[in-house]
Image 1: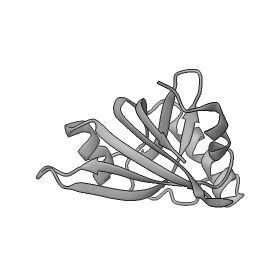
Image 2 (image 1 turned 60 degrees about the horizontal axis):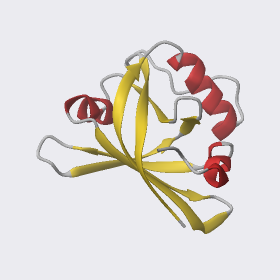
Image 3 (image 1 turned 90 degrees about the vertical axis):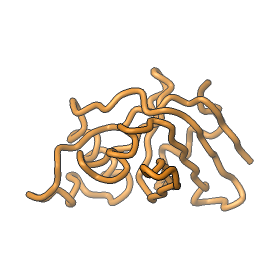
Image 4 (image 1 turned 180 degrees about the horizontal axis):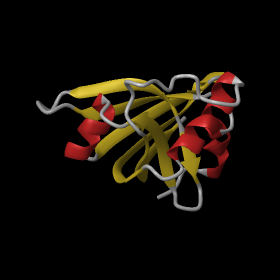
Length: 132
């Protein structure tokens, strides 16, 4: 399954996603994140630092969900259910810089810190889609 072409513009805007993983006790954990899409692979992409809660949860249980609302039309949304199929470190630093250009209009992601783990891209298969 892929993201319908009429919703791919959401990945060119400053569209935030609410990304959900499952805690060890089975309860949901949801975080607002920057989001991207790899149309060639059909993967939703979420970039995070190694060791953060969402990365740890997804390693234990790869079932995830994400929903996003068009920043220009709050009645237009995309919701995705899927599984993290890869934890990709290669290219993750460049990817977070690309996202920072889109979301913050800066050349480099300013949130890097000494206490932060390596960047990692969560590559998510698109197993289910809901839209409005």
